[in-house]
Amino acid sequence: MLVLFNTLTRREEEFKSIKKGKVGLYTCGPTVYNYAHIGNLRAYFFDDILKRTLEFNGYKVKHVMNITDVGHLTSDADVGEDKMEKGAEREHKTAWEIAEFYTKSFKTDLADMNILPPDIWCRATDHIKEQIELIKILEKKGYTYKTRDGIYFDTAKFPDYGKLSQIKNQELKAGARIDIGDKKNITDFALWKFSPPLHKRQMEWKSPWGIGFPGWHIECSAMSTKYLDQPFDIHCGGIEHIPVHHNNEIAQSEAAYNKPLANYWLHNEHLIAGSGEKMAKSEGNFITLDVLKQKGYSSLAYRFLLLQTHYRKQMNFSFEALTSAQIGLNRFYEAVAELPKEKQIIDANIEKEFTEKINRDLNVSEALALLWPEIKNKSISQKLILRLDEVLGLKIKENLKKPKKESPTEIPEEVKILVQQREKARTDKDWAKSDEVRLQLEKMGYKVEDNKTGTKISKI
Image 1 (cartoon, rainbow, N blue to C red):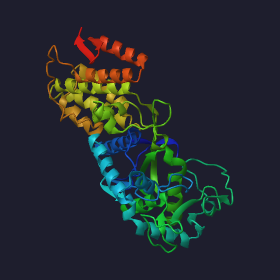
Image 2 (image 1 turned 135 degrees about the vertical axis):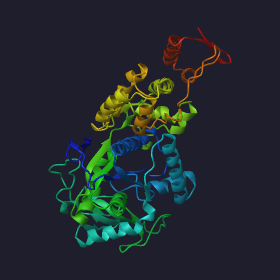
Image 3 (image 1 turned 120 degrees about the vertical axis):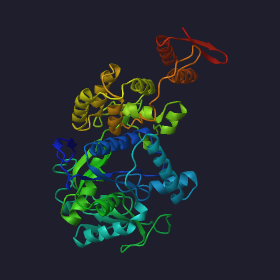
Image 4 (image 1 turned 90 degrees about the vertical axis):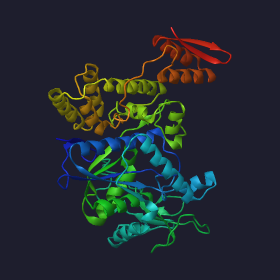
């Protein structure tokens, strides 16, 4: 039995698909105006674990992910610049070039982390017609009104508005001012925005209401319904999407078609940076996957680190933790290479326990912890580990090789990483950090000597 925590009901529920053996899965994709950071990638890693677990349980998954390349403003209140136009201005490129470049970068990051791609990529700019048609339906049903800056959804006419975040007795303030135009209620949101007067945007289209561009939320409703029908099984995203984006999706989709948008809503928690704040582009405290690779870490080491925290728990990121993950992953590969090929009776018991853990709301951290003592005791087979890697996604088969014998003068990769960290600490004049890493190296059996040309490492 697969059990998932449904944000809509705030409880764990047995998963039951609409169509036997098949799952419709929609996951919120990136706004492609900048690089994805490792906090963003935690969300796509969570989507990947969910998808892999569904497939491990025998489901055929139809996975759809959107690419937001228009309409996502810098404020959730439907004001501010379009992030794509802002990115184009920042880099002196067209908005279309920005979208193409960062979409390609995002797909590269997913491949590096061994995150399975969706079956369908859908860009907002390729589905303007579908978005306009959905707005027409809402207009005909009386859910829309026009302001000076666009067409808005009237949340007061949808009694269930806010049910995903369980808003109760919400205060709807009439006439709330926005930059241009007036909203009737503070929670109303833009379905279509008009292009500013006397200013031609790079991305704009004709519509029954005037030249402009779609609001951010309408794309997901239009595209998910097109490719998965309504209702579909599972909708995913980060917890930051709950109060605005996903509440708005539910409102416009259910108002249009009088039936649920999705049966299960799953959300992942944030990655917390060293500052104690969530990692975010807007906060300027983000780290990309390329930065990790430049520091000598593998993308799969970051995946291995993510496997150790449940998706509904905040995760604190540090390079110390990543170093431990890199070391742990290397040892994991080496230990698996020493395992016997098959152990049928014991394997069956371990697989059963592993499956029970991942099927309890994707508790992959406990499932991974289950494997370590079995691997160390050589009481599990390579064959089973490779089978379980269908969920873990660590590319064990590709890394299944005997550990090479270390020569007396050769420095292991994990030691090199620590040396790089210490040198950075010294450059930053973070002497406490430098001493901490030196002690760690000494515990690992390496002597550290500093000279004018850098740091010399030798076996104790």
